[in-house]
Length: 70
Image (cartoon, rainbow, N blue to C red; front, side, top):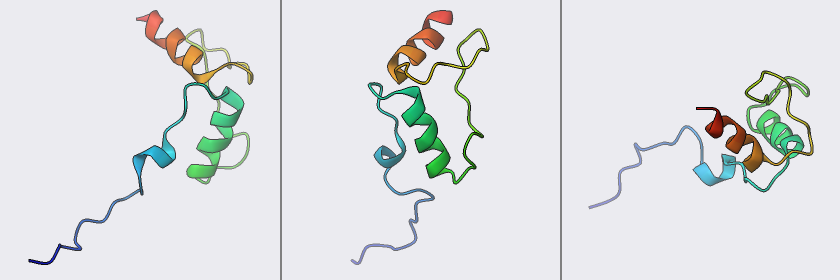
């Protein structure tokens, strides 16, 4: 029985769009803008306090800040 070709993904592999936790906020911003074809400077990652995260902060540390907030 041949495989059905009806299963089309909206996006290719999920890993292609996943951010690494050991990457910086700056590289995450660039990657988000590239993947979603947004203009430069249109994305901002923020701390739980609402302030913009520093560009040299690690994504894992930013996630930890948000998880410890709850």
